[in-house]
Amino acid sequence: MKIGIIIDEYHLKYKVSDFLRYLKSKVDVKIYIEESFLLNSMDLDFDENLFFTKAKGDLLLAFVKLIEEETSIPVINSYKGIWLAINRFLNSVFLEKAGIPIPEFCLNPKGSNPPFGDYIIKNIIDQKNYKFKPIVNKINGQLMVADERALKEVDKIDPKYNYLYYQRFIKSKWEYKIYGIGEDVFFYKQLPILVNPNKIESRRKIDDIPELKEYCYKAMEVMDLKITSLDFLKSKDQFFLSDINCTPNFNYIKDGYKIVVDFLLKQAKN
Image (cartoon, rainbow, N blue to C red; front, top):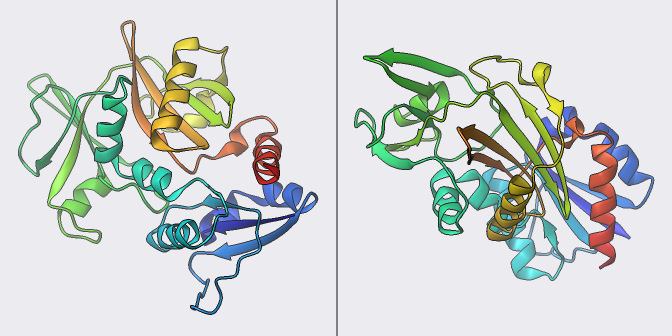
């Protein structure tokens, strides 16, 4: 059995050492690095049983789409799953239509305020590896939070967008981090980043929350994701899904790399 890993240099260097060591002890592994992989029209005879993606760049997306169109080899996560997950506006539309509660959102030109009160500005396409850098302002009681990267993008620093993604700001005591790996769901909570920028410092494992498990399964189905992480905020008694990720860092889960490998092996055998 052989599994292909489609990955970028950052994830390969920093995120998957234990995962790869364990995977290589089970099956043959071929690694395709996004920044350095060369492909020609005579080299499309893949012999992998399964591909696993651990990045979300444009070249990776193109490679995944080619595999899905030219072969019958399953890819986790799929082109559809990756593209929907990284496009905040599209995934907001899909998730809301599926009945999953999300904060109010809109696309507006820079300088045009959204039709709701407190808000946060996020980048539209969530690619590359970037640490959230909030710019916080409060004017006449209105809270305005902006991701530094989103503002740079709309100011014509590559990538370039004409609009900003606005999301209603949900004031929540905790941020709930939910990981979905196949049928397994793992629950954590941490202080929001505006309260404690070192999010891992306050992270703790919590008991299952049936409502969030249901939302997790539904989101994975709608988005065509087999492996994901989801961020929930809670206002009063209402949970809101604020972010969804197609390349979660499963190292935060106890034996997370083993859980992912075992899931991939099961999928490859099927």
